[in-house]
Image (cartoon, rainbow, N blue to C red; front, top):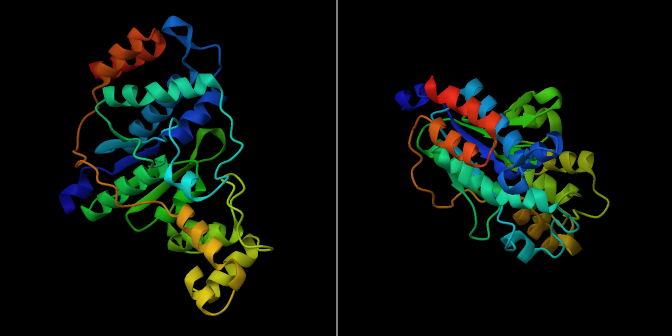
Amino acid sequence: MAGQAEEGPLLVIDGDSFAHRAYHAVPKSIQRAGGKAGNAILGFSNYVLRLHEAEKPRAVFVGWDKLSEPNWRARELDGYQGGREMDDAIVEQLDVLPEFIASFGFGYGKGEAMEADDWIASAASAEEKRGGTALVASGDRDSFQLASASVTILHPIKGGEMARIGPAEVMERYGVRPEQVPDFIALRGDPSDKIPGAKGIGAVTAASLLKRYATLEEMLADGKFESQADDLRLYKRIATMVRDLKLPAIKSTAPDWASGAALARKWELNGLADRLEKLAAG
């Protein structure tokens, strides 16, 4: 176990979260071969390279949404993430980014009606089980439920900095423990995902209730929210990341920057290709 800890953490990245950030932060004038958009690819790569240099992980795993099919949450909750619209340019780049990430020798998960959340949660949980540590890079606060003694969330803040979120920071921000985050979301709701929450319950009241009761289920057993019980159970299920997806073993590996450089060159993202070639050359 000690040897695993010494070799560095597993870096787990919410691909969609950082690709969207990149798309809106990097000029849309940046294109790749064939006049196709390249700004999200470039910006996402910058995030990955910065994280890899700073954290020196033993390996990297990226979780992605599959936008071409409804995920299991959308099937269970009408209106889940409803109203979200994406430019064709970001959708097309999201389609090819997994290929680019794979060219570095990094693992990724996508599809099977799962969201990026579920792939990253499963990778982080698998790393905990093997006795290692994981860093989960995500701009989605839902990921705070993963925080533990061996899993730290890297949450982007202003100026490109990353806040390191562990159990104490989750408690400081929300007033609940990491394992209570799904209960908290079920009660408070989540406007960005269109989870309604309990009627008339905001963040302060939700946190207060979770100081008295360990879980939503305990509240329901005590007669609270009787008329909303089934809905709240559904909201909690929707807010809970799946942690047991079967993944191939994520082996410790040095990045194949040369392969990534070749693909960047093919796409005519030449500045990025130059940077990757320098990394490959050591």
